[in-house]
Image (tube, rainbow, N blue to C red):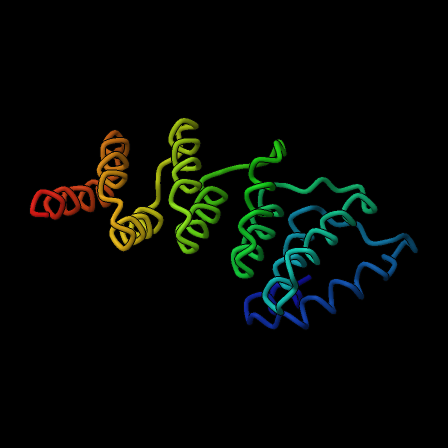
Length: 190
């Protein structure tokens, strides 16, 4: 396992993938199949993501977890969302986020989907997830807030931006509060 960790640190993703696959097929010192947990499997998912596996491939790998009596966790689904964001598969990402999986969503899940939606200029859909995230007690990341500002300004949706700023004022994140203050000043001058 030390070799596996070294490969992860060095980001030798193909080697990580191949070593994991070899290790899974191997037997331990007692002649039984090697056992692993969901966290180790997630390293395998990450390696596949980093070497260019599609979201569909990752979904297939997650489905195979059942063969090993593993239950995918939040990190498993967020890796799939990352692949979907890379491929700009917004509809699939929304379905995964809305799918009701017990391990979804968290702030990273929301950030991935909202960021993708703002990238694709789907402001209304992104606002739906902002509302869901805020109602669930999650804080809007500065990155997503900045993407929202850029998207709303480029599309001339200043009223939407003002509404969002009002919703986000309740958050107690100083860096976000500073951004809101800058936005408020800009909007007053428009």
